[in-house]
Amino acid sequence: MTRTTFIIFACCALIWACVSQLNHYLAPLHLSVFAGGLLVSFSALRLGFREGWWASFLIGLLIDSSAAVPFGFHALLFAAAHVGVFHLRGRFPREETSFGMVTALLVNLILFLLITLLLIHRAPTPVDLLPRLLIDLLVSEVLIIACIPWSFALQERALEICGISLRRAQRGLL
Image: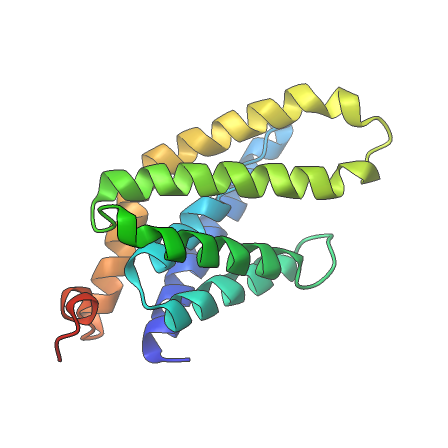
């Protein structure tokens, strides 16, 4: 693990804290948001494999620490999402924020559906949850559309402040 990993982890922890606070305020409305795609997309698109994988894995462990799921559940899903996006990123303009938004939306959709399918058996009447889950997914996707430019800018600026240049690292320059 490198300094880059910890900087991205700190930024993702801040984003996760904001999302948790938003969920707290949305709870009386029976809404919740999930921003897993927002947390994974930057590290998968812009960082090296090892640095991004560790950042995704660590943020998954952080989310696991407060979730009622087996420990490592989100970490495994986030690491798998990172691997999938990382191996496809060479075919797309990964430095574009608009592509980052599309990636975050798709990753969030896939993670949301996987988590739902893996955990829906815990509900006494799973069919009754479908309208609420669809609304939660819609609200989550709108949140990602609104927050992705801020999220990417936060992470890029944090790396710049710490003296890490993504432009030179992506092109193999020292």
